[in-house]
Amino acid sequence: MAAEPAARPLTVATWNVHGGVGRDRHYSPSRIADVVLETGADVIALQEVGSKDSSEVLLDALVGGTGFTAIDGWTCRRGDCDFGNVVLSRFPIVAAHRLDLTVGGREPRGALDVVATTPQGALRVIGTHLGLWPGERRAQVRQLLGALAGEAPLPTVLTGDVNEWYLWGRPLRWLHRHFEPTPAPATFPAWRPMLSLDRLWTKPASLLAELRVHRSALARAASDHLPLVARLAMAARAAPSRGAGSR
Image (tube, rainbow, N blue to C red; front, side, top):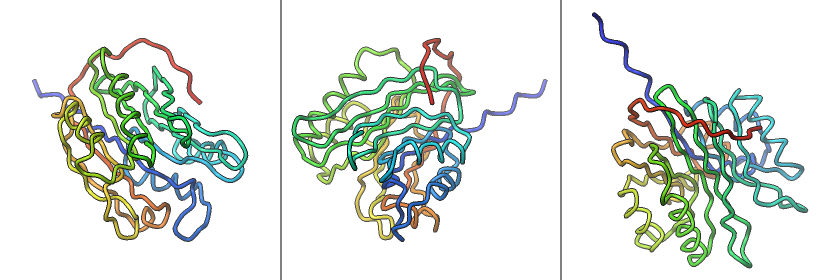
């Protein structure tokens, strides 16, 4: 009897979309959606989803332009501060938790912790955007690691714009200790990447088959960050039955 064909590898990505405003200073939700599709991502964590008018404007355009399910994690909803995190998924999202990572006196920050059901089983993806101050990032990483402790063992991806400039800083050391180190290709600035602000870790470490930067001309124009894209090697597992609200 012929063997069944292997399942298509899963792809997870992260991208800071700079509020939908590109290097040309034009606000273009359709361009952001086109780049999301270019990456081939099945699940993508987005940061700085927002606009001068309303975060929903960009989010609605992303959903309409990709056909993906969206979970929003707004961190700021007042005045001209209207933005936050979003996870888009090609597959159903069956659980979603919004983590408040705000440190007193600093800009509101957060993380989205979702579980998607894929053809290979359940996949947990945590997308985040950490703060600019070193002490802030230390507190936020401690909180993220606390959220990871004691949970059911699902294949897990932690990803996002971690804003970590110090390669030997404690936040990166703690994350490497929990997940094992992963490659850190430069993603910022998009026109000449020099800094590895966008990161991705997996648990187990063997889940990560490939990590690359998406460098298309459209991606270089659409934001000040480039998307970071991972190919996963997932074995089939059962999906959880928890429910979640989605947009």
